[in-house]
Image 1 (cartoon, rainbow over the protein chains, first blue to last red):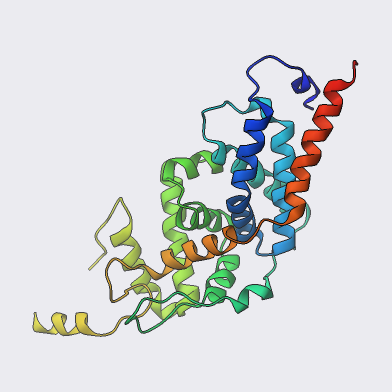
Image 2: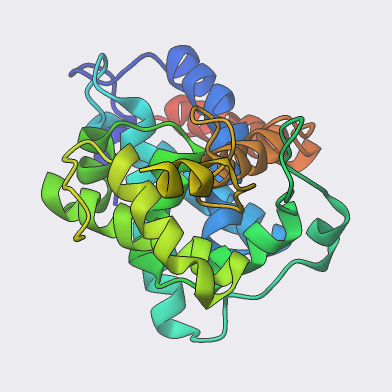
Length: 195
Length: 64
């Protein structure tokens, strides 16, 4: 596919620089992949496959543009292709259950990381990936829109629905109302909640 | 008025954290990400990069 890219010249980024970018992105690429598929080994396979594809397509990357968005897009596309072929790809990583917990001093109810990770896997992928990109990875709405190939408004609504659903799964359905109020107050396009 | 005041003082669960700036879900998501991202990168990731580079160098050497 990329034989032509092996020729010198053109605007191909220098190999060493490209390699460094790839190497630097590995930790967060692994995190994104693990959040998507919920399984350590599958996630690492996914991340490595994305790296190979990125390498093969490196002359299509414009130096100076957003490398993270570019490679996340590659990983995401590969993930979607894979789950289409293998509907049972998502599975819960029991190892993660050992990891505990998020709590602020004075807070009554800690959230267990294992609950969050499990709950994430129950969300529709479109919502999950938005929570991973923006909530976990700190991507901007614009970046998330670029990666997922959707409109900014879609990012925001998926994010809002994902948050609400996540809170409802973690706290039980009776809490979903609180969660909804919260996401409205934290969301940027804030709407007042219905009285 | 005083009623709603009382309600605000009630300890809140997730989604209504006591500290207004602290969002437990956001914090959990970030912690999850940072936890994975701070794991040591497995060796096979780095050897993959080496392989990719070597393969490219070999290709470049071949006159074809």
